[in-house]
Amino acid sequence: MLQSRKSGAVGKALNFSDCEAKAFVDICYHAIFGRAPDASGMGQYREMILKAPDRETLIAVVRSMVMSEEARKFREHHLALTKR
Picture: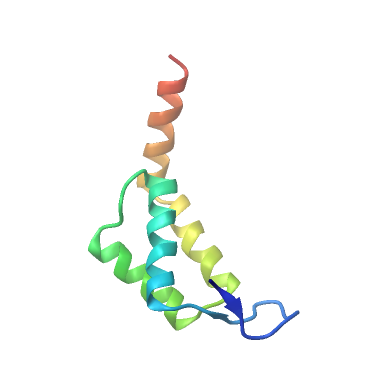
């Protein structure tokens, strides 16, 4: 599981294994897009997390996904289905 390297610091570095970074990206993709990540998306976000494993990076990854055109279309599609 993720553990911080320092306690009490804002923006503290986290210990992320490659497997944990991949799992984080996979979970985000399923929650935000309703699908598994493609190879390029997995690689891009995994690399971001491994280069700067801190809270701000995780937020940036999620924000990037949520603000994408694909996520907007996915939300609109599912909102339309619930209004039927």
